[in-house]
Amino acid sequence: MFDMKLCSICILMMTLGNNIYAQKGLRLINEHIKDCNKRDINQTYINTKTGKVQSLDSSFFEDGFIIQNGDTIKCKIYLSKHKISSDCYLYAIAKLSTDSVYVFSPKDISGYDVRGIVMKAHRSVSAGDTSYFFIKIIETGNVTLYDRVGVPSDEEYIYYFEKQGAANFLFLAPNKETDVYRQESYNKTSPMISKYSGPSESQFLSALSEYLKDCEGIHNKILAKVYTINDVETIIKEYNNCKK
Image (cartoon, rainbow, N blue to C red):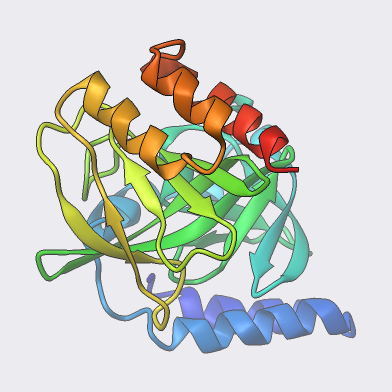
């Protein structure tokens, strides 16, 4: 991703010493980085935004974890003004066991955790273009709900729905004007086909009610317009309670 990346990983592996879990996590990161020379749509933006990371205000670094294939590496993660910003969906700026600062993109790691907020790496392929970003976990259960704000490769706000045991998952953009199918995945070997809804609130809710129809109460309440497009988190909470 950045010119300093491979050198940075080597330094990290040396400074973390005998911590076997950290070493394992860094080996996994290093293996993943072999594929990172391919530039995606969001890469130019990331490079521009992270050009001066060494001069960031240290008071904005908070306790967190870098996640790679289930392993965690304790670190400090930068949060501008102590808030999750749109840039948090594109990269994580982290301090590990030294004062050196490292930048991780979704191509480098599986995700990261800061303030109990978990960001999961994601890949999208549309019309031959590939882009990488993080999606934020909002609710977990029989259906896990994620969101993602607009990024350079796709300026739409998107909800992602992942049902346990399902081969496919649904993603819905509340303001998308047309239906679009595209391939998305959490890794390079297990693509899942996803679908936008559009262009109206009724179509958005219709797609969601169909997706959740195995809970009759939720399905009927959506059709009866008890919920609006602003109630997605509540809908998923109630659905997960229904499926317990």
